[in-house]
Structures are given as C-alpha cells and as structure tokens.
Length: 65
Image 1 (cartoon, rainbow, N blue to C red):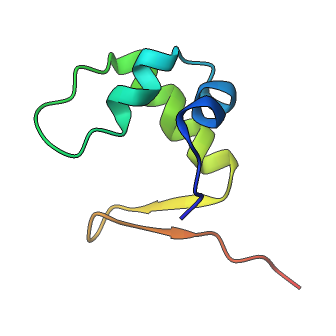
Image 2 (cartoon, rainbow, N blue to C red; image 1 turned 180 degrees about the horizontal axis):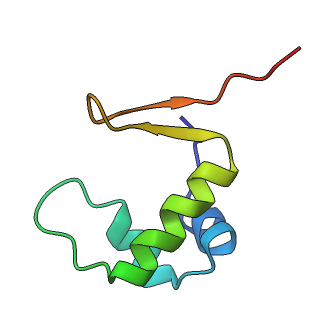
C-alpha cells in the first residue's frame, strides 16, 4: 500500500532497523515491543493508512477535493 522499505519505516516510526525488519515478517510470532508497534501504527496513520476495526482491514484515507 505505502511501498515502504525498512529504512523508510525506521525513519517514519523512529524505530530500529531490527524492529522494522521484524514488523515485515510474514510468518511466526512477532517480537515487536508494544512501544515499537504503536510507533509503527502511528507512522502508518500519519501517512494516510486507516485501520478498520470492523473487519481487520486497512485502506488509504480518502483525500477531500
């Protein structure tokens, strides 16, 4: 959706490179700390990602004309 690579995620969320790589894992249990997870979620939200609690989905925020 945002096409961020790990260095961009580190910068946007102010987390370590290791945390950014761990957030991108496709399998297994994440070992992200709560603080790193919250920082990453806030960075995504600031970039326009909306998290939809009803169905667990995500979407980009609509830009008003």
